[in-house]
Length: 276
Ligand code: SF4
Image (cartoon, rainbow, N blue to C red):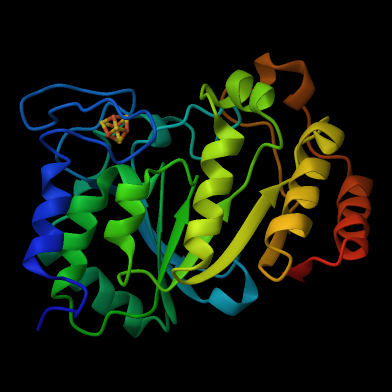
């Protein structure tokens, strides 16, 4: 039986993005069915490069069954997924048959939740909705995202997602442009945070990066305090210089341990609702 959100109209609206894609704010309108490729380089096949049970997510979400999809609309130089994030040809196709079997396996391993991660899952939204639509015994669904998606994409997610897990990485557009290759970062991500907070449970994550306390962490805390003071806020302190980070002096080292304590103290003093 199909989930109640999975109407034919919604699934068909989602599929239309493969003909003229507006799933992320690159808004490139690529016809992914006819061989055009946008900045994400994705075609019309979503691919899973691994899936496994994880316990390192926020404690209220674990154990969680994570599905890692290849391909992304951002180009973060420090990406922990490295080449898998940027080559959407990696992995096995996400078909309903594969997905339903995998979900049953995850349940048998004790997964309480299911989490879509990347790369960036939103660029594969039509295939994901299709896979989930008639999946039996689907656990609560978490959407772990860079939040660079469009309002149209968020509309398609409405009802299909239980928890939005948002990466609020940069506190200003200059850092986002230099380290992730995108424009209008703050405007887009903050718009989506507000909209998502009205649509489901929301956890806002910030990955602390070396050298980005004043330019990124402080503005993120300030924005959260002023706009989403009751949303859950998760500070991640496991930064390591992966992928191309060694070419960027400011992020070419691990995070100094004292930074995490200072960050938690600052967020606590700002009255944010910290989760671990
Ligand atoms: S998801 Fe990819 S194809 Fe779609 S708008 Fe974004 S970059 Fe373009």
